[in-house]
Amino acid sequence: MDTSGATVFVVDDDDAVRDSLSLLLKSVGLHTRCFESADAFLGDYDPAQLGCLLLDIRMPGMSGIDLQRELLRREASIPIIFITAHGDIQMAVDAVQHGAVDFIQKPFDDRELVSKVKASLADSARHHEEDLERYEIHKRSITLTAREREVMSQVVQGKANKVIASDLGVSQRTVEIHRARVMEKMKAGSLAQLVRMVLIAEADI
Amino acid sequence: MSRNLRTAWELGMDQSSGSLVSAPASVLYVVDGEAVERESLVSLLGRLGREIRECETAEAFLDQMRDGRPFVLIASTHLPGLSGIELLRKLRARGIQAPAILISDESDIPTAVDAIRSGAADFIERPYIDRILLRRIEAALESSESC
Image 1 (cartoon, rainbow over the protein chains, first blue to last red):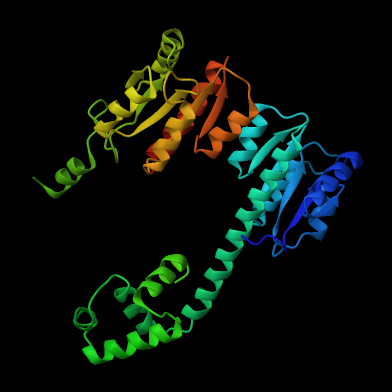
Image 2 (image 1 turned 90 degrees about the horizontal axis):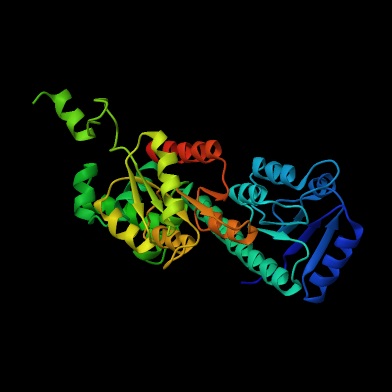
């Protein structure tokens, strides 16, 4: 998975921690940006930006947990790895129940941290690609007419043209024409491709 | 049989209360290798008025759960064979989404993170506070019976 365009965002109020994390991440070739508060991060954050978030819990102002809740509210899907010196079980359980990827205690092992960061970047890149694909399919599907949509939904259920024709009360020839238009508009090279697209976009179509 | 009666029958009649429920009531499984711990859990959970089944190992649980009754799993992370987390992963891999609460003797954050990521509804350390454990299990029961 290509994560070269991804950024690791470090949010921690402690200068020394930010410096050492950014040094570590840059040393393994990861693009890194640091923020000294949750507010500073939010002010700058663009949800379209690919990356992951290394987040301290205890910070003056908005805490790391508050920031996580705020990102959830905004439906931002950036993976979050919490780093803390003061965590307890309940806090970790709560953070992960709310979608955090991990909850790491200080002092941490550099190599382990880097491998967790890389794994979550790869995950985020994959989700990002899926989002783009879903969006592309959605764009194609909205060009379909209501009748074409109907035919598509029957086609992907594996129904033969003859059956669809009798279900919809039209001629078989009409179904063939609709079917060809569906394939063309959806840019599907085969029935299998069309089925896959419908599965991916299920919620939208 | 009248239509209403048949519907009631199909939905399943809760025999203990005679009320109409959408599914048979969930069973509580207690899976713990330590007899003392298991007994104290069973006596505590007795207050919930549910059927409780005890198992010493994950393997014994996997065998018993085959009867298909809906359940809530309360399992220790440390078990003689498969661990609690391994058991949970196995259930999820089979597509079984029943709520599970893992109980651990150690206050270990990585294990807690692992448990939740593996699909546990909750993770509780020993010694637990009775009232809190009961509340968490009630929440799990609710979520298992609302769907």
